[in-house]
Image (cartoon, rainbow, N blue to C red):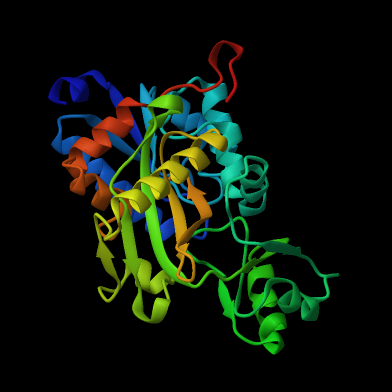
Length: 319
């Protein structure tokens, strides 16, 4: 690992950005930056919200570690710019990043691959909101399909609450996603690698206060509990890992990512929720937690991810 660190060259850590998850990205990026430097990597911070792509090109980075979350960093737009600039980058390429940033399109791909995901409806200003509970049942989830960190998410318990839930999500995004609520346990699975070499790290179970894994409980409190490896039978653990890797591959992901899964209490059936192609790397984040359970330190994890950086569309090859 020490030799790998020395071969990485000049590394830019892209952090901050212009999305609603800027504050979390700054925390992730600072952690990655410190970890790479601790391993002897020539790493430097770069905030695309404060500096231009022309400045990024002028830095002559040998590679960049994308620690941006949300739009303009995780949605394929930056990945396309890096392809044009010829700068190798971590994580998924243009197409997979764009698909996974849109929870509706992610679901469509999973369903085409016969992978289980909660039932859903796409809502806009013309939608009959009162009809949605009859279609999906109550409670149900309403959320923006292009945001992460549970921004704009509402658990709707009564039909009368639909307009307010829709308005909250629509203020952030359009259209809006309504989703069947799956009552049960919540898990997240970190994945490293590409194609047939993609592998799942130990599964993390998330136990939030009253089942409310919101923005505050994700990043700023210590009341949410995490169990890693999750307490599951060997068979169920293997099935959730298999399903997560299949979901990751179906979307064309590579490098690293994190798949969120719900396990329905009534029949112990797993359902795919979403993929994060640039997961959090803060002190509360789950990919580092899973890595530790696999015997990989935070610093070594950052070096491994940085070492996987590349151009995904080189020589005419797409996702």
